[in-house]
Length: 220
Image (tube, rainbow, N blue to C red; front, side, top):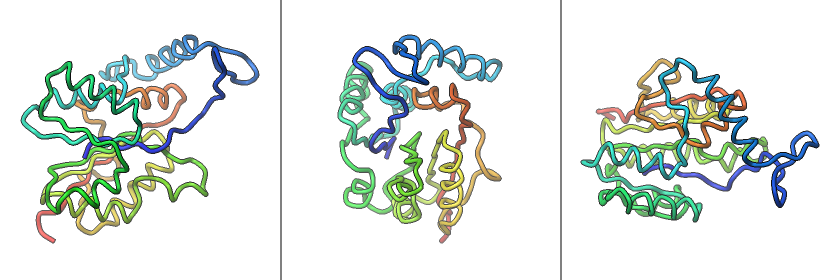
């Protein structure tokens, strides 16, 4: 199961021709230029490419680098699904399948136990308000369900730029007895994970990005 994202989080007020921040009207191009400058400064010397990819393009990039593995991408967002289908067609990625729907339902109802070599959940909606935390994708019940779909040794790789969501992910993954952490806490950023647009926005705003990699234990 590839990237899954729920309803988007609106962080600025959209206008007909631009955005309003702090009472100042700005164009989208100005915002993108500002984010690129901030991101380039933060990533200077890190070895990570500073030109981000849409999530759909990032998924296609990872799929193109591993054509020997079948990939199921799950998203509820129709435009994102359309962009990914276009990228798959352009790249001749016939080992990729796309499912539009809720990730919990797809994993629960459509995937057999022990059918996944791995699952990636990159920058899911953080639902920042405390009363909305129950809507977050990574929850103990979903972690337990997802773990049953992994083969022994199969991985779960999560990434987020929201600190308290990262802490929750770490807690919930570590609490699942069938999973083991690959690292002592958060994992180093894997070099093969492309920089996504959501990650760029988080970095430009000073958010720390964390990765987590857990694997299903070889024995119960």
